[in-house]
Length: 129
Image 1: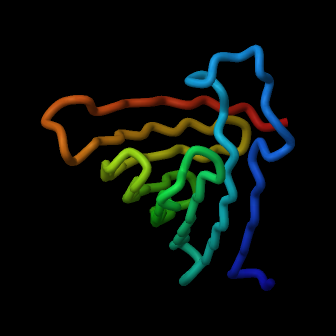
Image 2: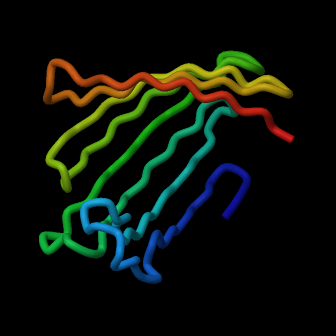
């Protein structure tokens, strides 16, 4: 709606499924609503709600929120939290990113807070055109 606020609506996989793919491998139909807000130029916040349309009689949802802060022109710190009612699990995440003019590198750490093990680390490299 304006330079600081963004709203999105996503329909994922609503056109049907391939019956030849086993049910446990099929992507689930989802509706996602997201809000992104920029405040004080160096902070960005985001909140998403995901509802799985099929195989979800209780209408459970996934709630995701996060914030990122630009420390300078190239360095970004990120933190997030997720409440996943579908899996009955909660996750937190931390990350750092380098956003150069020709190369972008992101590192993230995601942890299920209900288990002592099982953290995930990921590194993404992007070359914008």
